[in-house]
Structures are given as structure tokens and as C-alpha cells.
Length: 181
Image (cartoon, rainbow, N blue to C red; front, top):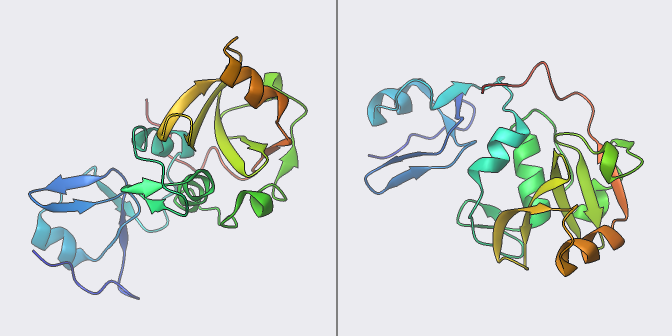
């Protein structure tokens, strides 16, 4: 099973990580019609190229992925790589590092107003707000992509709250993205 050269010929992208035997196609992988037929990828695992994935649903697929500084794939990822990757599948291209990502979007006044898919920034770190004080992020604390309750009374949550540098809302996400239950 070898995937064809998709440069310029891709018409689809993987929406949900697909595994068959030794083959693993992470979400966002590009496919041609021939690839879908040859590998026998079932409906539901891929979408047309223009389809935008819901950033929270995609971020949840990364839960448990090991933290790797500089990583941008499902075998190892860092916080800004996670944010850049999930937003690219949602139709928004963000810079690679958190310092530049923090310059994008509009200001959100505080963690209480933080809504789904807002970005929470810290010195050298970024997380994705789920709402209700929850944040998905690739982090050194847990050595993986995990969910942290920012409103918790733990020392870790308190330290995070105290070091928030900004919260940003990336416009243009919502109705045009997949919103499955």
C-alpha cells in the first residue's frame, strides 16, 4: 500500500486519523481519488479539501500525544504546533510559534469569557480553550496533550492563571466548520 504523489492532485484530506495494518494517516493527510480507492478508506474518514474541521473536535483527537518540542505531528507535538496544525485544518493559517500566534485575532478580556477555540497564551506556551475554564494543550507538565482545568485550585492551575499573557479569539471559525456531536 503506497500512497500516490498528492502534490497538486489532492482532492481530499483525512478528517479522523485512519489506521489499517502498519499504515497510519493522521488527520489532515492529503489524498487523491486513487489513494481512497487503493487503500479502501471508508466514508467518514476523509472530506473534500475545502472542508473545515472543528478545531476542538480535532484537538481532542490529539489527547495523549506525547509532548515534543518542535513537533507538529501525532507522534510528538508542542503547544504552538498543536494550535497551528488544528487551525490549518479549520481553514486558518497561523504562524508556527506562540509569540507570533499571539498577534493574531481579537482580545478576550479574561478566562471567564474564554470561549471554545479561543487561544490562551503564556510565556512561550499556548493552549486551546474548551470553555468552562478547560484548556487543551501540549505541555511539559504532563508530557503530552491533555486537558487542564484552569479554574482548579491546584498549584499548577494557579501558576498557569497567574502567567496568562493574553487570550485571543480567532475570527472566522464556527458555522463553516464541522459541528458533529
